[in-house]
Image (cartoon, rainbow, N blue to C red):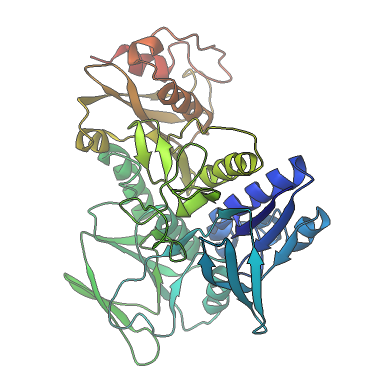
Length: 443
């Protein structure tokens, strides 16, 4: 029997906790979390804010009560003050000021990530908002009820920023989006695809101000405007969605760190200290596209890392098979999905990277309900290995990206895809499928 202590109980933590509780009944499980809720699906936050779902209830899939029913001891709203890794002891304090000391045999760190907070004047003004936790979304919705808030500025044009821009526009607010980069979603797509999303946002009256650095947020107690190196924009509310950084404050002086400050782990989620595991957004992972350690903060990766750590902490050896960073977004019904490396990223990573593109209708032209699909496959010209893929359409083509994820994982070459057995039926696709045609078009 082991005493396993978990620090953090969101997606990665919940997956690890349930893995231990469901499969290894003879262990003592103790959980610490600083929040007052468990398992909030932040990816559904914009849907809630934009009134596309009825409420937040469905955005939770676990709870303190559910874990306790399985036998865990759960401390919510409890802050970890220190971890003595040498003596395997944790020191915490709960919301009532009670000090808690807990020993452990195995420790699983699932401390997640923190929003990047830029050091700019005015960031503490009223109506300047981060959006990550349930409480953040709740506060945002409450602020939107104020009729004085007519204009919202979103700083950051990544996935969360773009989703929130749509949500605020759906709430009948005027929206401006600002980013230092020259486009949106550049981490996941090449310009041929980001251009589609730019036009999509502009077509829905979202003002885009890219290639600009935010210098200051102005206002007398409340936000009145935001200043960049290229202009000043009047606004009533500012959402800071610049990105996230791994939350590794507790172990940064004791555990080996990756370049961005994340805990460096092996394929079993083990840190540099024996019996200490790190999972989710606070830890690294193995990236099959670059065949090396990387940092890709996604809920799907968090869950998988939690399952792996849970089994290994209980004595069942289980190695990660790596990830490809598969992801997707749907904004005003424009669906974009990607996996692996973009062409730009692949070149920067040192690959002899090229791409093959194709665009065609999803179904034969005699089918009335039809949508165009754009695809790009990125591959290494020397080894022919598939490095990444991007797809965009108003059709739901999301399942296609899973094949490319597997292709990257298994080091499939572009030539293997040329005559891949892809079925045809007019209800679903064309006989010369765009995946086949893209592969056949490869150099």
